[in-house]
Amino acid sequence: MRRFDTYTLWSLRGTLVLFVALFGIANVRAQDPLPSWNDGPAKQAVLAFVKDTTDKSSKKYVEPADRIATFDQDGTLWTEHPLYGQAAFALARVGEMAPSHPEWKQKEPFESVLARDNAAMSKFTEADWMQIIAVTHAGMSTEAFQGLVKGWLANAKAPRFDRPYTDLVYQPMLEVMKYLRTNGFRTFIVTGGGQEFVRVYSEQVYGVPPEQVVGSSIATTYVNTNGKPVLMREPKPFFIDDGPGKPIGINLFIGKRPSAAFGNSAGDTQMLEWTQSGDGAHLMMLVLHDDAKREYAYGPAANLPDTHVGTFSEALLTEAKQNAWIVVSMKNDWKRIFPFDE
Image (tube, rainbow, N blue to C red; front, side, top):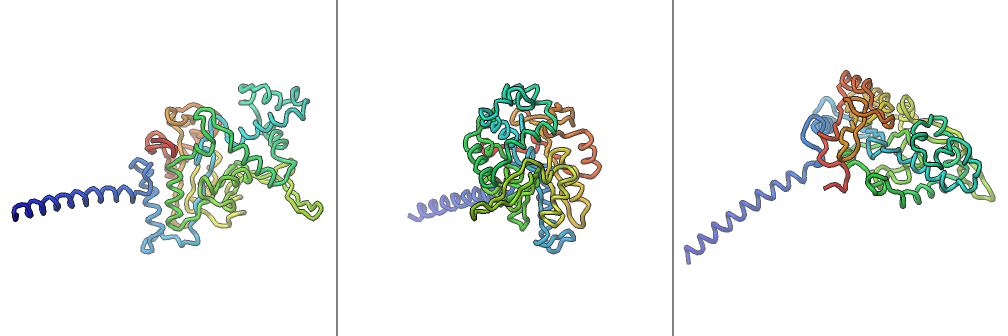
């Protein structure tokens, strides 16, 4: 009987040791705040930045009230190819509105849109897009516009992946945003896209409330009709939140300089410069799309194709190297790209 007891005891002890070991491994994995990132300089830069800015004994400590992180959206938080999500929405709206505008069949840029002439649309100028935005985004209240966006997002799918646009968000960046917020940072979206457009889904998709979205906007007018006040959207720009407009927007709407800034194209250059020029700790990161197999590959930096959408130029790459900005390789730094990836 004693032998059986001794054997049983040793068996239980072995089982317990194995359980503890397995639990320890699982616990370590569970504690990794960035599980979709491969170990490397980019991941370590994020971890080190958070450690330095939240450790009161660190010279780089940042007071909670000053912990601000800004993120571009298109190409930084979700896919921007083959066309920006909001541009796809605008083109869909042209098709919906066309029956009421027969003149569009012989008027550019609408003629090319209705003919689905991709070659012609790829050459649209900023003025062309402003015409499209003016007719598809204005002449209605902000509530009506947001209702249109919600309806489109519920049914529209990105062509390559055949999934809703809001599925095509980058899991590694979602983890960074969550990790920063867990450590007292406020995360803001600072985008060249439409402010009211992004606000429709920002909280559900990114965990960023509408008031923390800074974007381009068109003029609005306060109108009170029969006791019901509304903000009517006018067919003219109010603020363009791109390039040098991003630091202006940050100062105008946030009022504090960020400690961390994330982008992916030339339009984010000034936001990263503005962030780096402040006092204290900084983290500047740029996403390089170099994974044609899992997403897209474009530059033209690093000898990648030049698609003219979300351009990552050689000049930007040079500035990143000179200023010690972290360039994130989708191909090498990310274990998975989308939440639905296995």
